[in-house]
Image 1 (cartoon, rainbow, N blue to C red):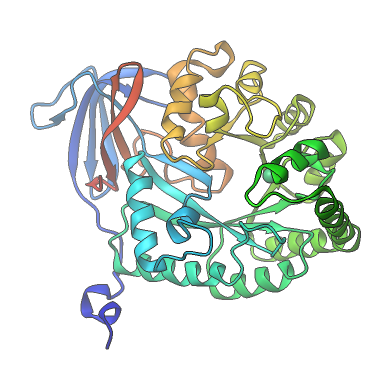
Image 2 (image 1 turned 180 degrees about the horizontal axis):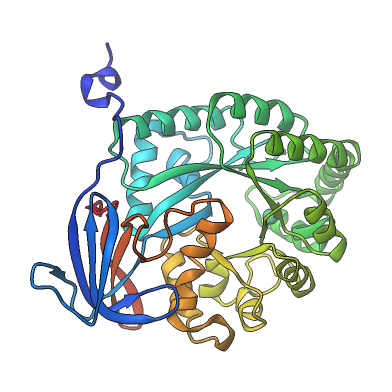
Length: 396
Ligand SMILES: [Fe+2]
């Protein structure tokens, strides 16, 4: 028996829950901010005593009480698993280190985003996809993870092995969200090929123009051969299993029409105002990166998330590659008129992502929902996560 097979890792029958009361002068409900006490029994919210600070409650004072954040697209597990190129950390340990950072950022429900499909880029997980899948399952089985983990399988539709990897992964693991990506040069996120060339030239070691010509032509060839057919197969795999689907980097109205025809419900990272507006108008939940908000623009030169918030077409924020950006991004859009104040801003990181993925039991401070709650101080203009509760139990 090795160390990972000791009785302490036995599967837990159900999630640990707790009973507690939390009071705050600023409890963030779905549509307003009120003073009051949130009463929790056995992991669920059973009462909200507005305008009352119950004497038995843990008094958070002027700190805000918000629902636990719901994160749909974070690839932050990857730098824990592969902290340096060609260096791989023991995945079980990496999952716990990652989980602690996620919970510490106020995220109580996380979709661990894993890539299926080798695309020749060094970021491809390859066989690491299954090593991480196994490690996440084993970690969940211990009952010791702080956040509630789900899987978002990111499928690169123009890669030779994406179908095989996706099928294998779906056969072995539970997946709740799948996204359809196409990072071919000249398409979507990389429609400006020159910017992509600059990116590769700046890498170490940089590629020559001849290298890039050959690499880009190879990627375009894969697109011509696989994009349409593989997309169709992946959409069918998702629908057969009732898995929510996300589009990725929609740029043109024709992309949005394709998303709608494929039964997509989340539009991840649309790259233009036109695609975002068309998606939102059609009822898709438009998701943008919180780092885009915090940094004041897209790192790849596409549309700014703030611009979409001002246009009233931003529904969900995602921390993407920096977990703490989720709460910071929400606070940063709270002053945008079309967002609906702090309550509306917090909805983009709680209720909206929960609803978009069928998690109707969380994402809002209201009687009957899970008591996933986060205490936040505001310090020097920044939100600081002080305490995190999942199902009423303190996890960070
Ligand atoms: Fe992308």
